[in-house]
Length: 453
Ligand code: MG
Image (cartoon, rainbow, N blue to C red; front, side):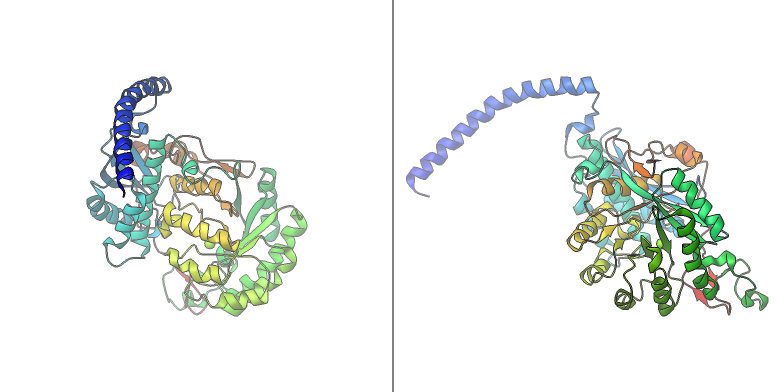
């Protein structure tokens, strides 16, 4: 720096100093008027940008108002009245997630800055040294979503605004159609179409058509548990093309039809069955293989042009790298609480944009309305949105979770409240305690061999 530069620099510093004093006074005035405006709109003190705010406690709330166990994380902060909610539901092992949250995340996160979501995420992710398991990922997801909820409340904005704002006015979603016969199913699909749905997932006799199967030999032999389900793979394989045929003929070309194989077939059977569905133009076929066997996807891609959805069982965002590079799937079926929350789901969604692979977040009944809201906020903001799975919320669930997303004419809507927009009534939630009774999902072949459920 030469002499002239030094002088200029000194005078600039002086000017900034003077400006600083002057502006401070001006700003006081400005803050005064802002505060008047804020009071008029009754903005909460925490939404005025006061920092730093720390995490005061992290706790789990278990509730099962609609049947499935739900686990919600509540993050309380040092700012009175400011808290966030996130979905940490791993319905089959709910009590283990509750322990992970109350016994580990609470201690680890207390005192951390609520604003630093990425830092909190990265630190929690590696803090157990061993990572990538569904229990810890669900706990982390609940925390992550709760921090986004808090950030939205602090900004006075719905979370979708923080993710970039709306790309669409609402979220097209699909409903679940099932029936004992293809004809009964077609009626069910028609009912959804009458409600305005343009996409329906069709299953006949539950996943793998288990309710169509008869006479399991393993039960006669006293093998396994009497409650174990029996799936006859041949019965299922034969039923699916017939189901598509009947529903297409009865419901027409307008409706988009989806189907979930749920990893229940042998790889070649799965490929052959999907090929036979081409003439019915499925919107997508889901989970043709288990995630343990990804290399079959290349063969599937070489065999058929039916769109494929995959990934609800992926534990880690890195599992998408190979799948995306090889363009094995068309739809990203991430279970947002399994993958670790909004933060990693957004990363995968953005990665998908580069490959024209679209989102289709996993949205079954074992996701709380807070989790469904998290899906919806991402859906509103990402360009490469594909479709959203939806379920009906019953009155008990809605009483526990005021502000839940709503569905009208086949579209999901979030309310415009700051954050994720969903609250929890803890008194109501306590009426429906979680249990460990529904945790075991056992499906067997005729000889008793376990099938991926
Ligand atoms: Mg599925």
